Length: 105
Ligand SMILES: Nc1ncnc2c1ncn2[C@@H]1O[C@H](COP(=O)(O)OP(=O)(O)O)[C@@H](O)[C@H]1O
Ligand SMILES: [Mg+2]
Image 1 (cartoon, rainbow, N blue to C red):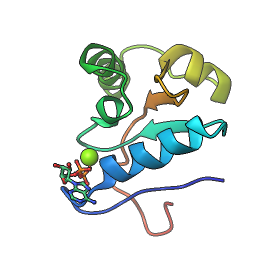
Image 2 (spheres, rainbow, N blue to C red):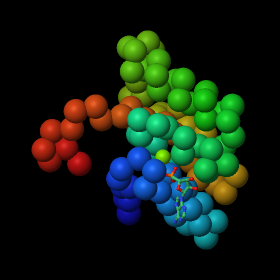
Image 3 (tube, protein in one colour):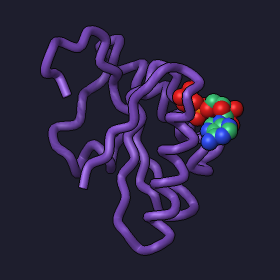
């Protein structure tokens, strides 16, 4: 199952995403959480911590600035750019979509 959470700033996207991800992971579901927000702070709500969240955000910013290699496939994305939260959620900060065309999702 894939769940996308979208909405205006301050509407509760990060909080909702983190709660759903953490509850599912605690129940034994394999969960991967991807943060593509312009304000990427989901790592904090997943319990990953300030330092590690900033490290992951820094890696995304480097890729956005064309510094470094993108992951070639799904598994290497998590290996290279992922981190595991305390409830077992696997987490990565991914590039934001700057100018979504109609039908982008
Ligand atoms: N269901 C809720 N009830 C009350 N406050 C909430 C709820 N969900 C989120 N908040 C609070 O609203 C603020 C914005 O939530 P956040 O998840 O950061 O929004 P977003 O990611 O959409 O910008 C935070 O202070 C958060 O604690
Ligand atoms: Mg948010």
